[in-house]
Length: 388
Image 1 (cartoon, helix red, strand yellow):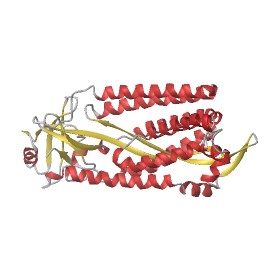
Image 2 (tube, rainbow, N blue to C red):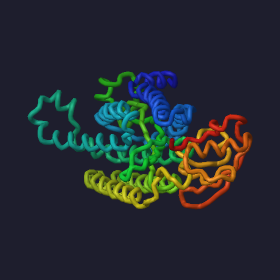
Image 3 (cartoon, rainbow, N blue to C red):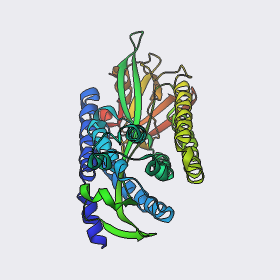
Image 4 (cartoon, rainbow, N blue to C red):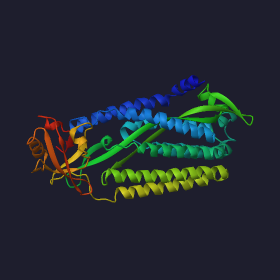
């Protein structure tokens, strides 16, 4: 039974599309870094490593929760969600659209279909009406489960964010308004989470045949493994990475609590499902508005500077990484000599062929010292990517 379940799960197109897109995302990142910085900053395939860890950890934990709660999802939402997330995955390597956006689209579309079905059910042939529409009773009965899935999705984003590493950010250079170049940073993570759920067996078998049947209160249900797609990440260009990550975690935690509370309210008061969803939508917009305000609050950009040399990125497992130099730091002095550009920086490195000493100013304006051994006769391989 276990092997058959795994086989049926792997036959879903969304599963293989998520695996393919993970590889495409890695290839595009390497290509982008080589085009902008003449070097692949981080050749490690951490996207694939994170994908596997998320699959196992979030899949086991999430399935335990859905099995314990007994989540029952309408088959219409399952099909609609997989179609929308398929589209989302296809554009993910290019636009990085949040997976939570597609959950909202699937839910609002389902609510719209329910509203339309109330007004067209009598006009359409019975076969079409039963196959393509969802009645209002079926929707409010599944409301708590749909919001619970959203809570799990947001909780997954929060857990994935705990894996953030400074050396895994992707920098991008853009032109500023005053001619100087700015650095924007982003950190992204993608997960495929298998969730064990229940679905009514009357129509789902036409689309996804062969799943196991169980009977609850004389009603047949299929045990179905839903491939939940979760994308997590954040961007920063006017804050420190730590501040941006901390605010993103706070925003996600607020949404997790709100949606789990909404799921409980839908379970207690199912007839208030539409009202609860509209309230959740309003609260989501408010949190996104506060997030936007936070992003615009600071004025200290990661900008090209003449006071030193700006570190755009740090390559892993290099002398610079061992010295704890962070993306965004400004190197003011190298080996006792002030540096103002790339040429002066590498000339100062050659003063000592095997060791270097830096005076650095971080994003907060604090000064710090860093020193360490470098590769003999190879100062360009220290592991720093700077403006050039």
